Image (cartoon, one colour):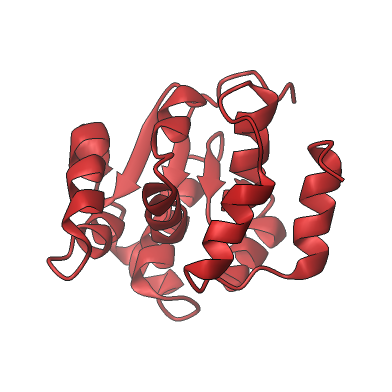
Length: 167
């Protein structure tokens, strides 16, 4: 797929939303997608009163109109395997397999891969944004993510930087 092409539908899990909000780059989701769905369970998680208010304000400004309820029975079935947010995102992609799941959780990604659903993580989305000219450099963003306490496997960082031409 052309990295500059818009995704017709992106279904977001919490982690990419939180991380991109902390980086100040939430806008790249909307810039690379025609339609965005955020499961109600994920929305409740990312806009919880304990979250930083600046992040909540950014999320509400950009995505308050993107909240979608997942099929309750399907969501319950996925909750046997993953946390509630991932379960709701998986329930949505299961009913809308033409979409792309934006998810970092390894178990959720594994389920998506086994089911044949397209998925991408935060690093991959940042790489797409760089290729589309929305971000100049990835390395400083990866450093910020590490400082925020997000574990990123060094191998994955190096692969992504190599793909971005930043080695």
